[in-house]
Length: 269
Image (tube, rainbow, N blue to C red; front, top):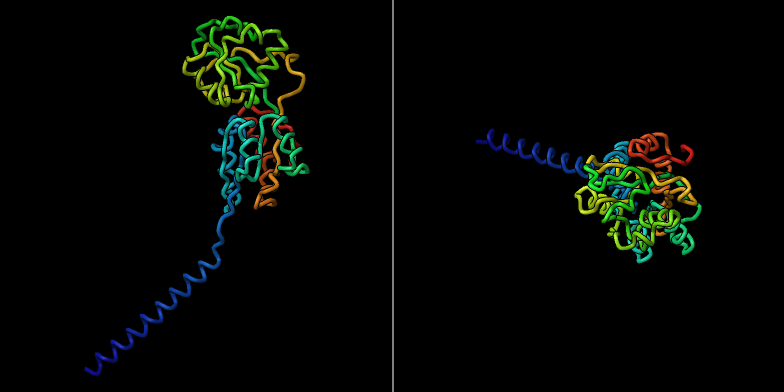
């Protein structure tokens, strides 16, 4: 009996030591694991595929302590939401107008504003091209035309500027369906709800359900379609956001942007 009692005592002590060791080890591990930093990106709808499919996974793999969350919509809507206090670290616009407004309001850090990309506007039709369009000015043959709402969607603002330059805006006014962002316009045309649409070239290249008929004539826009990005002043992680912005101007990011049809502009960093 004495032998068994001693054996039980030894086993109890060993288990206690092991338990303490496991607890101390767990505590040390918990102390060494740092919580991840989450960066919130407010980006134009036309950037969603490039970010979600390639850029964000690429960045998170190289920076395991960083999570990147994207919110995608028309730049005008994102501007309004940021003005209203939406939590965002980086704003990536599909036009300079929205970025200029936030800069003037001192909402973004003007020292970080960079023109990252250039895009083009193209005329698209459903895959079967029901109106038999062959050139950009053939848009007049379409009975239903989808464009972004010029009130808030940069692609729609560009569409209006192009059609006004070509003296077509007034005559087509009754044929427009106005989308809340360029992705919605693309979906309408792909589904055959509109016989034609004006979208960014990059969006048109994301699906085989539409046909690109033609680019907008070079002289129809007074300025190129630029995509600026900048750090939002209320960012809780300004340095991490600046690092991500630098990544967007790197050779690796430029390669991805080209895959999705954009023209990178910024010097590699």
